[in-house]
Length: 328
Image 1 (cartoon, one colour):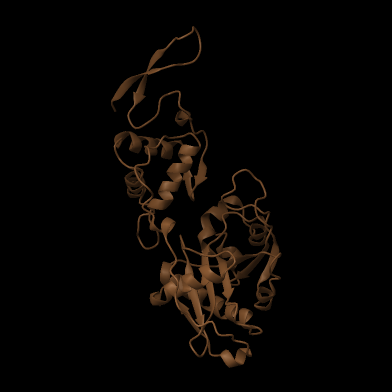
Image 2 (cartoon, rainbow, N blue to C red):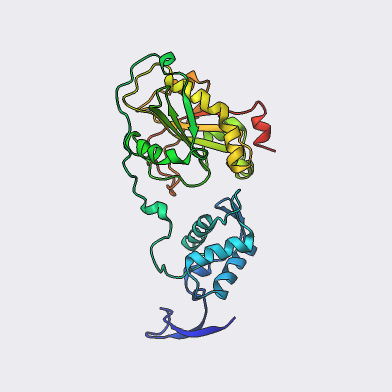
């Protein structure tokens, strides 16, 4: 590894005193916070990162001083064989890992060259025509429902995204990570409901106690849980018992659809209900279990501050042995 000499003002001693120090290509000066040593393993983006892994990343940076952040993240994935269940490089996860290491002072990344190539950050949801005529009948008059899982029915994705974006109070633009999307139609092919299942919460004390998880077990098995992050009955649909019926129907097929798409097991579903808006009645009627409340912190909050309303935690086990499966 070659290095250049740079002039550094150390800010101590005699006035105006300067000293030369070597600067390693691709790394930082010795007086930068990026030379922080890692004395214990940390779990970042689901991976155990310790001194050996940090040395690997620093060597990758040093050997590729002209590479972009995009290229570095892909190189790291290739080096570690870090792929998703479909075999694709998890370069976005690697990019996030590198950014977190830089924020903690362990590495220095090259300057950004351009805006993120992630098209989801700039995605615009397009309006889609749909029926919005009032539906106020009994559940029996809507049956049979047609439930379309959008991995198997991709042509319905624009309508699904527009309905959630337009009518769900949390809105919706795009999905990242493992997810399943369902669009539900009545017997006349009118849309009545949308459901989105995505990545489980990284930490949830009430859920983890219910499962019997410690930190290690949660890290190993978190991707065997999915989160019902969006559930929408369209506002012009006023049908008693429809919500619990839809939940029951979808949960019954969730494991099979998850296995078909990702080739991995699924043992539990979770959801978080804002009790300032909803009572959670449909979850209770569909035999979900309430296990406590959240603390009011979101996954982006790093300083243990309450920054969101506390929500009621609901779970639905998908097998009788879910605790054993999630702790093996």
